[in-house]
Image 1 (cartoon, rainbow, N blue to C red):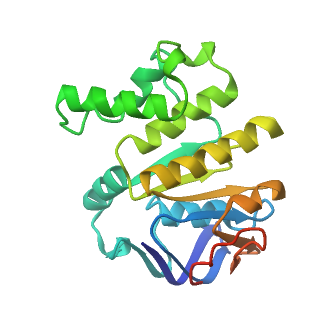
Image 2 (cartoon, rainbow, N blue to C red):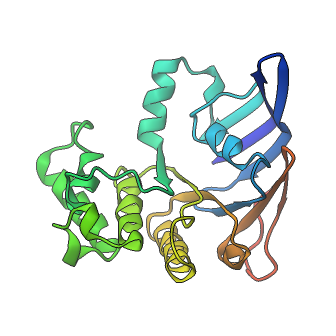
Length: 234
């Protein structure tokens, strides 16, 4: 489902070159649950930006569902990202004037989906994340954990092949953080969607099929000993 082949990313800051990623090679099977761990500045966010087609590699290939995204013109890349990739943010990024239900439905409004199908899909996701009783609440009426549940439903409502989350538990206490990761794991199994997310919390590693360790722009891969699943190729 996802392959990175010799991926490097270099930024310029004035006259200085910053090598954010060095020669990253990995692959991820469909319906996987992958966790990226590492300190600040290790390359986690750069890696997620490349996987999410928010940026292009300086060198190497990022292939999603057989498509080398570096070969796509900007307009086609934007459409590919909108249709095939979902995003979950640590700050939730919900629209404050919309209800939980409307925040999820909004992701479908520009797809041309018929109203009845759009409503049915939104109802399904609101119930799947356990917010049926809070569907009419606006974000300021919800807890942090509930807002992140809305964000997860919004990311999944278009049935993407891949969902990316950059530190999705950073603004939650440890109990809510574990609950959110467990929910993402349930959603990954239920919808057969691949998840890739970054975290600083080592207590969450047992949930993953595959763990990527980022350090100084280099990425190594392992399967956590606590999971019985075989690791994806790295």
